[in-house]
Length: 356
Ligand code: SAM
Ligand code: FES
Image (cartoon, rainbow, N blue to C red; front, side):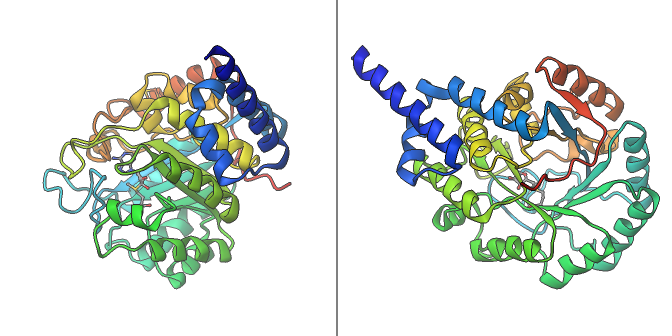
């Protein structure tokens, strides 16, 4: 038995070495690693940190997250701000309120602002472009990231021309059947993929991503994620555990685990060495030092919340979300201290994707 375990460990380490060397292994090999993760996770994390440090040094990029609307026309089964949740106290930030967040963020050292929200039809191209333009005018040395869901090619084009640099749109799962189990009928996997391709064609730095441990997800799906990511090659990949929300159809579903999420971060770092990988708020929610562990598994981005204090509790994507009772300045200080414990340091920098 012990001999078998040793043999398995050796095989896993060899696979990790192979992945580190070629940045790709086969679907079966990814699956083997995922299934035997308890034998080789520390080895993977060490390799992932080394790869990250070679490309980005020990620098961790901070992005100021502005959750500017919790209205959403969609009804994703996992999401706390889905349109069917009547318990949500809905809000929208005005242009001035968004600019105030940027002003505060700039003073705190942020050089990227991430405008995230539900799919809110109030924010037409005209309104959104006007906000993006004004942020760019006031803070020309900052990058603007949008994360406002699925829109038309034309809309993405206008927003890019207005000054948006990056776009986050998690694909949520690379398996069409699985996608359909997480979303209502009117949402389509093909449209999600079309949007991601359009964003890339338009020259955005694109962020895809998925939840770990979402209902119906299998280890095979996770192996498939890595194959998909290797083909699509996003610049950023948001990976966080699924966490149930009490007012959604998935309220009784188990949350994703810390260990599997960290393992996926490590595998993604070796598959796409140059990627920008956030240690997500969801990771910090399932474990009090989850974000630090994310950094130690190969992540290099952190996205503290810059949203006004009074709306934070209203952007509850899942239960017990952290940082909803803290002011922005407090979070930044807290994050700085946390990052220090990992041996890394936060930098005041746009933190663009580094090409080979
Ligand atoms: N509306 C935009 C979109 O769909 O891309 C951005 C906002 S959306 C709420 C941001 C991300 O939150 C989603 O892509 C999803 O992966 C994540 N999310 C939503 N509900 C979650 C949950 N219950 N647990 C963990 N992550 C969740
Ligand atoms: Fe918000 Fe620590 S980052 S309280």
